Each structure stands twice: as structure tokens, then as C-alpha cells.
Length: 424
Image 1 (spheres, rainbow, N blue to C red):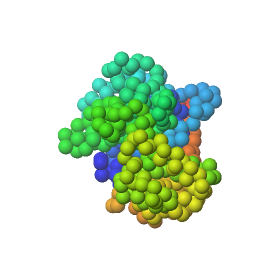
Image 2: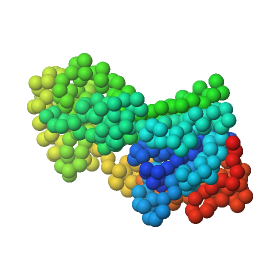
Image 3: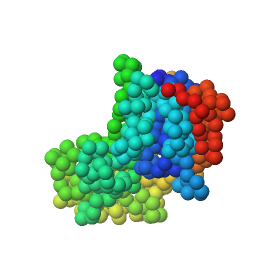
Image 4: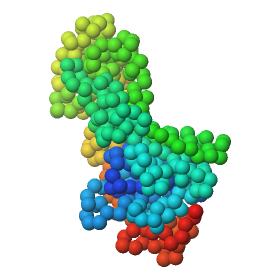
């Protein structure tokens, strides 16, 4: 299964969108299936599914049956290479269909609060049983710990970072903690950590032949990502208050600076040899900053010098100065300009990792190397999320996975897929 997930046979692109709070995902490789339940957490479960889909897994999103336009108003953007099926999870025929899909799936992801799927008869005691699919990897994703004091509370990325401790590290001197949008929690600490857990469980299954429950939560995921920074609190690297340390914008040669045209340069010249290159590029030789930079009492003066200097040229002019040097000084690119100037700014979006023998699916339309991925690319080339209409592509997936024919073993009635038979 691990090999099948890594292999990425060229397949037609199916663009999908999620209704963020009411989806079940099913992921299925060409020979084995993965079932993923999508969470009421913006982007976390969908991102784990996206990582698997981009690696070649077949992903089926199960949308909850909702009448009227409500279900179409909250589009999920993380939909590449996925399909959708609308199922009424309150009906016996809908539950029977999900159970039948679980029989041929590899992984199921449950992102809901504890107990929700159990009440529907779709908990691990049922779906992972010998009668259903003992090889099933049952992934569960929550924001807070499932066994902690906040388990039954609602929350978002900012709350999970807050109770993990990670949020307390982020922010400038004298300012309040600043959340880094939802990259660190939802995506890095949530979806990506769940993806890692799924891969570990799949590797274990190769040895044991058995599936298992994989539980991830954003609090522990974010805290684990902050391991180095937590250790640093008891060393000279990070034992000063927030915003006054080496790596948290306290140090003037590890920060961003505005240029003459209102754009920014990023400076990370920590090592002496790199700082020397920075001084040279800025034309600050002979001022002995190389000897004085290590003393914190000199940091305010050095910061003022750097702020003034960077404002004497445009960002493009500073790029011309520092490109090709070891000054650890680079332009801060914005996604809008990267999309417009893809060649100059290397703005083409690529797979998360390069597999030289079994590349992931390509995002760009002219992939020529394993680093670009394989296949025809996707609409928007990863700069535009394409909404998925609920139900799109799902009927074909049911036929492929189960060998069922619409109108015989299953059908779509009033917009909802129902099973006339069961794999159990």
C-alpha cells in the first residue's frame, strides 16, 4: 500500500470542493482503499486528503445531504484529484453504502468530536472489525486533545496554538502574541501530522497485516513542531522575553526590512561569514559591526542602521546586490507576483516532495522533471482552488471500487446515493 500511495499513475484531474463541516472522505488506491472523514475544522482533514491525493491516492469526499443552497456556499479549495458523493448519513441505506466503501478502503479519517461517528454506527469498533475491514487505518483528527480539559469545546487554529504553548512564542517585543494565520496549527500541526500518522500506520500494516486507530490533534501537533523552540527557552538562544531573542525578530540580522518601494527584504545572516557578506553588500564595511553584532546592547543601533540602509534602494535593486551571494539576504516574494512572474521568481508550485522513481502528481501543466511531478497538471496550477460540486465523480468511484452498477446495486435518489445491497 505504501508503494501504491507513492506511485502516481497519470490520471485525469478531478477538481473538488468541500463543504467544510459536513463531509466524509474516502481515499482509495487502485487496489486498496482509504476512507477519510473530513472534519469540522477548516482545511485540516481536507489537507491530509490533499497530500494523499497528490501522491496518487483516489479520494472520495462524502457530502452530507443538505437541501437548498447552504451546502454550496462554503467551498473547500483543497480538492485536487478528489471526487464527491452525497450520502444521507441518517438513512440505513446511506450508512450501508459507507460501510461497503469501508470494506474496500485503506484509511478512514474522522475529524469530528469524539463519539459522533460511533452514534452513526461508523466507529472503529464496527469498521475495523473482522466482519468489516481489520486492515483499515482509522485516522481521527481533532483540534484539542481527545482526552483533555478542552475536548468538548469548540475552537479554531488560534485556540489550539494558544493552549499548546506555541502561540506564546510568536510576536514582536512589547506586543501581544501574534497568530501566524492558520499555517502552523491547521495545516502543519493538524493535516500534515495526521498524514504522517497514516503513513506510519500503513508501514506498520505491511509488517502486521493489521490496521489501527491513528489519533492526531492540533494541540500536540503544534507543540511537537515547537520542540526546538521550547528547549531554546532554557538556553541563550531563547531565554529572553518574546521578541527579544535570536530567532523571534529580536536580533536585527534575523528580521525583515522595508525597501524604498514599500516591499521587503529578509535577513538571516546569523553566522559571522554570512554577516560579513551582508555588511559588504550593504556598504557598511569599516564600521566594526562584525565585532559588535554579538552584544545585545548594540542591537537597537544596528537595527536603525539596517532600517535606514534598506530604504535607500528598491527591492529589485537589493535583489541585484545579494542574488548569488552568501549574505542570507533575500527578497520577500508575494504570491500575486510569483504567479505573474513564475520564471523569474520561481513561482511554479511543485509537489511537496520529489520522488525520483515514483513522482507525485504534477501541479504545473508542463511538467518535465520528477521535481515537477508527473501527469497533465491541474487547473489553476495550484494558484486557484477549484470548487467541487457535491456528487461530482462519486458514482464512477463507487463503480470502480465496489464493482457495483448504478440502478442495480446502488442508485442516486433525490440527490443522495443509496445502497441496495451491502458488502457486509
